[in-house]
Image (cartoon, rainbow, N blue to C red; front, side, top):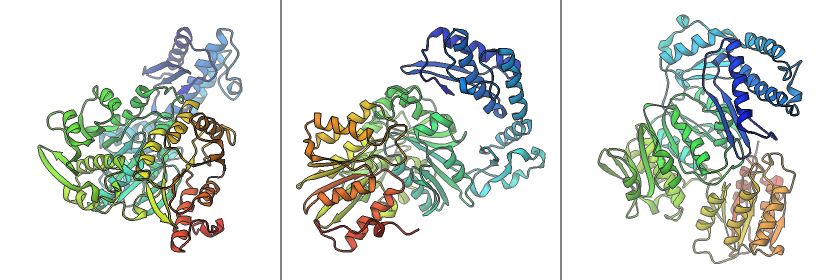
Length: 570
């Protein structure tokens, strides 16, 4: 897929792009397939279907068709650096076809086509990257070099098999829901790999650290030795940049859809974003289950067009039941208890207030995550009794859900650490943290650079509504996304002041870890610190700092230990 940048898009240009793509496809001998020319507020998304062994060539075709259409209408060559001799010439179609034929011939791999068709005939997951192709999942997986694929007749298909796969997406709650489903499958006796924005894990062992909520993380998890189930966090960015990691899944969960990431890849409103999130349903097998939030009006509207098996969750069980069609599973709260309803039978999963993840029932968004996970896990074969036992303990230990809604009482200060990364997430965190608040509120605030200014301002507006006495503004390491150092904090600061937060209450500390220390330097006994922490390398350092302070009996107002002393070993 190609996104136009700095190009004036009209119907004539899109028609010209499409005509050029069709001519090239015919010249290369490709079959007819889908063409998508979708105009949107900031330009257009241009995509074409191509043979599996010609995808890199297809990107060249896509770029050439647009740039040559622009040159033909007398416009500047928007892609000059991509043209001959290294790429197809935008100004000469005959020359371009010569180049594109050479690309196609070099990339062509008929063995790959035969290999994939045979794998799909056997119902196996196929994972392809730049060097390796694998079949099956975990314990039933084997891999081969892309350039040395065996003939299907030479493969011992009896040793290959798949495993249950769950996909989890949404604007908020993805990682918590992913971890809950993975924990439920482990309690059920499975060896589970899962991916999230913190890494790739098998049990407590990390196979990779960082944001692995895209296809690369999925391949690592699904190829992990010995696993027999996988739960894959599937983020918007990975879906839009690289598509679905797998073609087959047993369960897909969409937690919610809220204002976030507008302006990228043609996503400009909730309808666009909901369509992206619901694309996970395309991977579901015929008997797969799509788990949806009945309390999310946008999802309810968009899902009205969905076919197949659905399951619904909500904070209120009656709301989930109202949305569910006859026989569809549902889960939600009733009379303070979490109820799972399947095949007209109701299963009591326990008192919500006693579930550690619910913080006494106050963390409503975690109640929704528990309900979503219950439906997904049950669809994968986990018994209600196992879920009830798991939910009674999950979240009591810090290692259950690191970096997500964790609480410390340190030196007379109440501290909440979370990933809250958008307005809805921050609002939910602050509502929970300030429930019954007595002391002053100190807040850490930052945002990734790949948000529109309006989204950044909305985050500040949410913060201002809770009247913080101190706001420490930060950058997020690795997430500037083209913005200059301090650019996002400057936008946040302006909006905070406009919303009534006194300028002297706003502090700038771009380094995220130092921003946390700055907040502790301000706090005194009785205060509340709310710390959304985002950097993957920073989260364990913050947890280590808090554990150190708590273990050492630190009191508010005392000097903090030096930063190096709080860094985790290794």
